[in-house]
Length: 73
Image 1 (tube, rainbow, N blue to C red):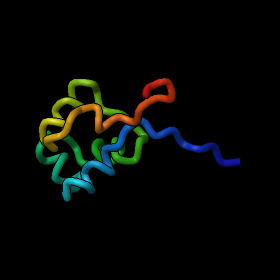
Image 2: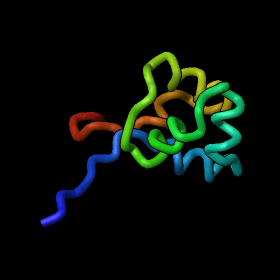
Image 3: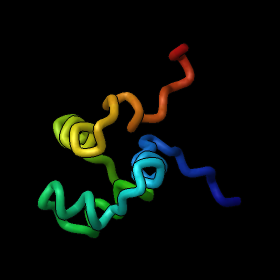
Image 4: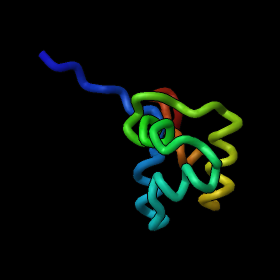
């Protein structure tokens, strides 16, 4: 039985909404494209500081990048 993977960030969706690619983001942040790809597939997560840099680059509220937990309204 394959376990459902938990999704922590919406990075891939927000990039698509903004018409940007993970390659663009990697270049903008001067990060490795493999690292950004892992963030987009939720195999890894950026630091809080990096989330803020990403939000600034995409001109969105940092909260748009994170999947809310069940307890939030």
